[in-house]
Length: 334
Image (tube, rainbow, N blue to C red; front, side):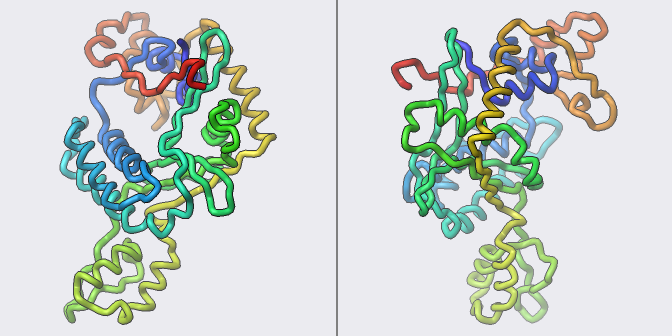
């Protein structure tokens, strides 16, 4: 059974040699060493899946989910990264999100894990996974997609990206979503940054520096821990609330209309045909500056191939087969 994934298609479009190394349709390899930002993102993502597993999300579930992930997936970080630093970062982001999200979860969880499967013929499926199907108060359905980031993306670039269109297209083609077709995707961004806890001044009061990198929830919690009255900090708390915490969390809804779906389908099916028809493999030459090639984990085997050497030995020692990360559905499940 052949699965076509959007991430795989993106790699095919950007560099066919990298696609040949990494695609489940080809060698299906990944590096032995995991980068610290991947572990942090996975830990946060798993905790969020536990948090949104039920209709009544409990902030305590975030940390329970994180503890469970940490127990079975201890950090195995490369490049001399500090394991404790990453653990503190992930737990700090989740703790803050648990304070922020209850007043911002303006939806009902309909399906906590969304597995999309669309038969495309010849034992081939398009498969995708989204984090949640939710229903807003006005009655519309949306997909909720969690993302961690170091900085928030530009909204216009997010609109142009194929992910929202791919997921909505998959739902329209999957009969299990009849009557629940999402209008689009709400990208739930969590910045990998812990808010600053306010320090005490010489008078024993909390600092009210205007440039403090903190949030309303964290500051209010500090007031309570210091045994003070929030009324004494009314103006500063109002300023923090008006910021809407967009320095740490942002939800970006991407509406997908019929014209966008039609355009995506044409591009998707054309690219899929190319991927499955034994395409010519060649690298994308981007060695200059801080390009994709500069940081590519397959840089060395690629250089060997370009110089006429056989990289098989390096591929066997520094890389391993990826575990299948996607669920395939047979005809009986559609």
